[in-house]
Amino acid sequence: MKDIAAQERRSFLFSTIVVVVIIGLLLWGIPQWNIYKREMSGQAQLKEAEWNRQIAVEEARAEKEAASLKKDADIIRAEGIAEANKIIAKSLTPQYITWKWVEGLHDGKNEVIYVPTEANLPILEAVRNV
Image: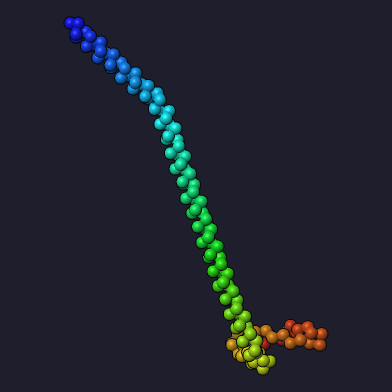
């Protein structure tokens, strides 16, 4: 009986020590776990912020490059228009302009032609009907 009682006391003592050690580990480990979890969360947020910044920088670079290419296209377009205007200006003569005006009169539309008088005022009653 003595052996059984001693063995039961040892078992109880061992169980009590195990329970106390487990409780002690939990009391120490839970705060450590919370600290570790917050640290990992902070690092994840930092990485996400870095990626977002890199994305914003790349988008800004793309916009800058697009604006530069649009500027170049506008310059080329303006040079083409200027060259076309030079060619047109060289080919315009008073006779050509008069011919285009007369040709416009024959397009079949009813048009009003104002003829200036001595005071450079139009005669409003004179209407050409075609």
